[in-house]
View 1 (cartoon, one colour):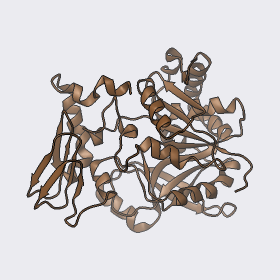
View 2: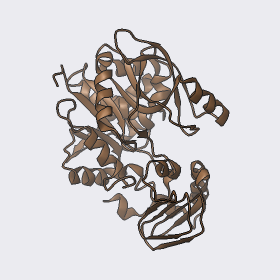
View 3: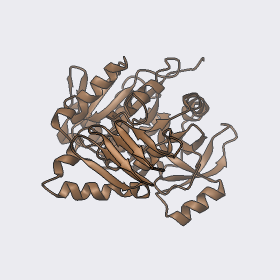
View 4: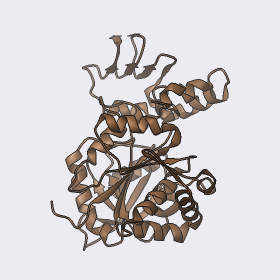
Length: 372
């Protein structure tokens, strides 16, 4: 398809994925794990952005500890990034977005950027591309476009976006009335029945110029720190290492908090693309094929008289008898057992493990994993 310019994908390869412990660890987090397919979530994300008519080669932003994981996994799917930017310390998605915008704006301040988390699942890739096409004109005109997934069930683990008035000049786009953080159950029920709320997917499309102008307006210290991190950074083989002293001087803010919830240029494009942040074992259970008894069985698992359970072994066999509604996940060094409905609370368990010297290493993961 003909278009005035390609979009620069900014792949955000960070996070710890504690709600998917013990498969996801801080040294080997969710983007680098094969959860819903043979490929990892990072590899699936990059493949989704591989249309050269729409997109340039991706720019990947990750923590320096994960550099070899990123390089290896991109090589496995024959993806050549335009940059792999290494953050010396974690400073959330506002810093990652700002750094990427500064880097790309050196060549073209009006370039379109698409912020894409690397740890989400999209089941309808054609629908994803159609949504990007729908949003492009608004982004070229200076709007900051986010993509809101239509809710298909009651969900308290997601942020929400309330739709405002439609934009007549950009069909399929709506002004953003407000962002809402994770609601309680009764509030989420109201959102679902109203039809006016969408799940916040965390994906954005906008120009580098608009992103930087809004960052300067609301969080100038982040722009200053990111600019210093780039200017004093070092190109190291395939990586761009940001300067730690400059980069670490900024606050840790999400792009939502720093810009999206404050800007007057926000619009949302509703999507129906089978989106999930697969942020918990329960979320993964929902999007994975099941047997006749409602079980998800992955790896070396024998299940007898079990129903509606998620059973996954990455090491020794799991023999399960008479389970109903449980999550059981085993690795070579840890075993998780919990009710499926407690999946969202797994970070509480991870916190307990991290605070206990006997088990803290189970949260970090093995050093060899971080080195690829």
